[in-house]
Image 1 (cartoon, rainbow, N blue to C red):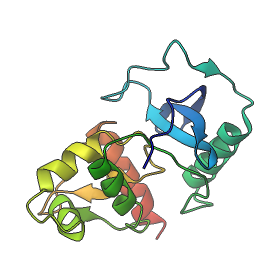
Image 2: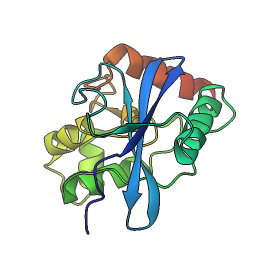
Image 3: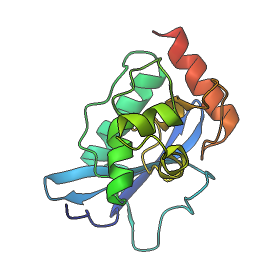
Length: 170
């Protein structure tokens, strides 16, 4: 599988959980969302110098509209082309995360087992921490084996709020 190029267009978005940066690039299938990060989250240093700021980019506008509708409780899933960049294992992990239903949670170990690698809970955690599409790829739905909240690149308080939000709208 070939990797899409780095995001080339970006925009900012104010959300109820804080400001986000959305990024889009071209994949082999056409324009795709390649990034959605909370400002200040781990593993994201902000828009890169070679990115083009474009608040009117059609895909980024649609992503912003869908994300705001999700925050307003008017949508539980997203309908956008996604093209996150990562290793084959990260790609498999991110695809599996998308199968966790709105309002549900899964442990890192359960997800590792679902990937056919039951001993890879830590690797799942590492891949999840590098998820470049916060909320769109719902890594906040992963919890510890006993249900405790562990790791979230956007911060545990934000993860707590995301899970409570989804639980109230099941």
